[in-house]
Image (cartoon, rainbow, N blue to C red; front, top):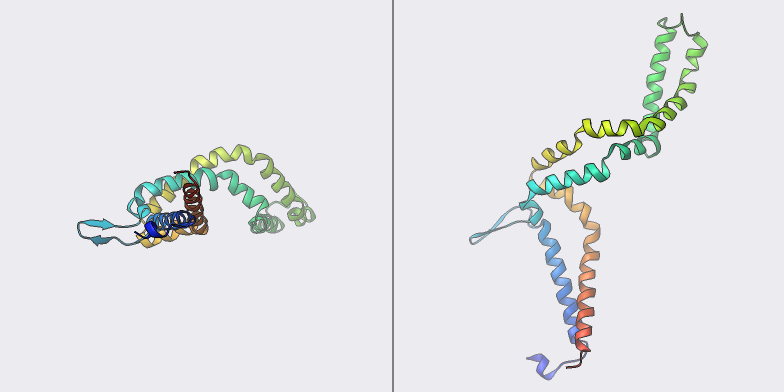
Length: 199
């Protein structure tokens, strides 16, 4: 009834913005909330991802295995990423252990003691070079035998609702406000165009 006596040109734009904002807000919230099932009369209400935990676990595990936790990505992280230092230390420890055993008399009959002492300095760059050159040949085998997808899928299916929500929600959380504001912007635009329509 208000529009009969008071209908400013911007009312449809503001109304559209409010509707777009609320629509996206409730749509996004319904993905993860409520975490635990809530009985409302004959209906059970729960976050959409949580009611489909079995199916979502399968899709999410497949996505992670194919796009994130691939052998190629893991080798890149180990050889050139934040894990490089830890991996180099692991290799150095193994080389040092080999050299220590050698100086104890295991291989000194074949390799001079001084050469064994220099082994960590010489071997680490060569090992890294070998891994960089051969990782492409190793990756298909690693992807096949690691079975990360199966492991992640089963672990996620066994999670409680709170644990499952805690794994997935942070991935989407940083984009929630953006999606809500996009809904508001689209609603505003549609409302503005309607207010300018000749009728």
